[in-house]
Every structure is written in C-alpha cells, then in structure tokens.
Image 1 (tube, rainbow, N blue to C red):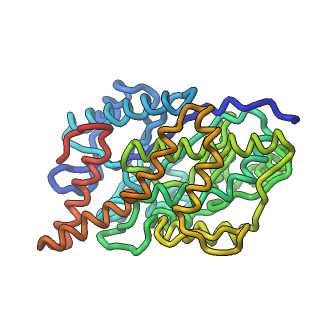
Image 2 (image 1 turned 120 degrees about the vertical axis):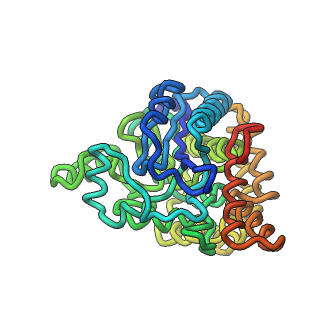
Image 3 (image 1 turned 135 degrees about the vertical axis):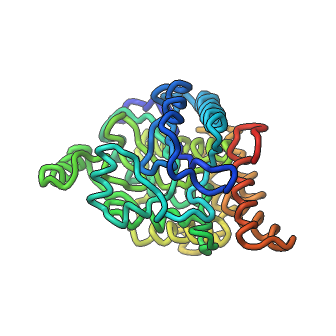
Length: 382
C-alpha cells in the first residue's frame, strides 16, 4: 500500500441567506456593521459571499463529526443571534422561495468584481447557496485517486441534501434547482479524471498560464482537491436546512472515502464509470431527489434509492464505527422517512394552499419554516 492512512479530518462550509423578517424577502443591502459583528462573534470562520444577502461560515478543522457538530451548531446559533440583533434572520436553503436575482447586489471585493465582470448575467443569477465538506487526505496522489472514485457517489449525496425546489416564486419541479443555476458557470459538474497529482497540476496550470484565471479555486467541480488545504472538497450538495441533515451528509461522505481507502489497502478499487452514466444519476437526483431511484450501473437497472442507501450504509458501517459517526449515518433513514428540505418546503407550500392561502402567502409560510428549521435547536421563528 503506497499511501499512509489519511487523517479523515472534517471541515464544513455553509452559505446562509439573510432574510428581512417583515417581508420574508432577502436583505439586499444589509448594513456593513452586521458582518463586522459576525466577525467579532466567530472570527475568521465567517466570510462575505458573492451577494450581499449571503454569508458563508466554515468550521475549524475538526478531528471527527462530533467536533464538527459542536462547531457547526455554534456557528449557526451565533450568526443567527447576530442577525437577529440587527433585525434579520438567516435561512439554510439553496434558493430563496421567491426572491428575485435581479434585485441583488454583489459584495464589494476585487474577486467578486472580477467574477461579475467575467461571467456577466451568469454571475448575476447566482442567488444560490451550497454546502461544502472538506475531508483530510494528505497524500496528493491518493487525493486524486479517491476523487476519481467518489464521483460515483455524488448523486447519492445530492439526493439527500436537496433544498432548492423554488425559484422566483415558482415550483420548478426540481428538488435541486440550484444546480441548474450553478451549471451555467464554466468548469462545473463531474470532475475530470487524472492518473496522478502531477497530471492534474499540469492541466490546471495550462489555464492559469494562459491567463484565464488565477488559481484552481476557479475550478468549481462537484468535488475537487482543495487548493488551500490537503483535503478533498465535496461541493455537489445543496445546503441542508437542518443541521442534523448536514452532519449526516458529511458523515456519509467521509465514510465513503474511508471505505474506498480500505479497498485500496487490499489492492481493490471502485469501478470507474463514464461521465455520461454518472451525469444521468446526477440529473435524476437534481430532478427527483430520492423519489424515483438511481441507476445501479453494476446491475444495469433503476433501483429504489432507499435500497441503494441501505446497501451503502451496510458497506460503510465499519467506517462509521471507526470514525465515531454511526449516529449520523443512521440519520439517513430519518431523511428518507420524512423527506429532505425540498420535500418539506413543498409540503409546507401545498398545505398552506389547501388551507386557503394565496400562492404568495404560502411562499411566506415556506420562509417561516426555513427560518425555524435552520436554527440548531429551539431557535426563534419569525
């Protein structure tokens, strides 16, 4: 076995939307002292995002999922409290139920000015939020090898996380409309495959040397080697509205990576499938969440998502025990039983309509649900 065992440390990044409690619309021009107060509360673990109505938080480098839980709950509660002190609320959802992207203002930072100039209308539409999970894989070549294999499981992770069924006041019919918006950017989707770290570096340096972008942080693949940390960064998922769902998805990701590493120790590996096949499952997860199943390429047929997940949970049970996150893995069954955030948003909307609400008022009830569910405990709702 040529690789030392990775640390499998965990870091989670989440992007939140700032809500005006009076209108339930986005806070398009929040005061600058709100972000200053957030920094005073949690330090450099909070950052501005592309749009001024967004904030991004990132946990510390966590030894395990239990530590990530403590850190993420602290971040959500702290940012929520500061937002409330300034007259706002936060939601963890990958799209706002009815906000208009044309009304948003991007943050005054050189990187974001460059992005807006380069991407034009595509960047203006980026009224979306995601969740990124970093896992410590210290060996460069192992990081590339695991990236090649983990692509198979990305649609499974997306299906569990979906939280963006609405766009500009309409039910899109998709559980993750966020990906439709994000995929308008270049250099997105399933990552390229490389035989080594050196080959990966040769390819991105061609684009950097040509002056197309500054560094590989502008590669926005569904999973990528982090340019800043010795981690493999999963980026495909929507942000999970409930913190337990977020930790479940993070635990599943790190456990699948450990399972793939265990295979490598026995000179085995997960079969690499063509992008056209993986992209079909990616689309199904984007469109249906976990309602209509995914293709099991080994069997060559469509399989109910619950069946696939039960098989996967059996495969990573050893890894969950070793990493101390069996509880979080078991939460997969809870998500399957009660639905993802997208399911619950749609159910809230339909229930309000059935009770006689107008479509506009029903969307406001969806925002109220999101505010309440985002809090990591008994947080105040609007």
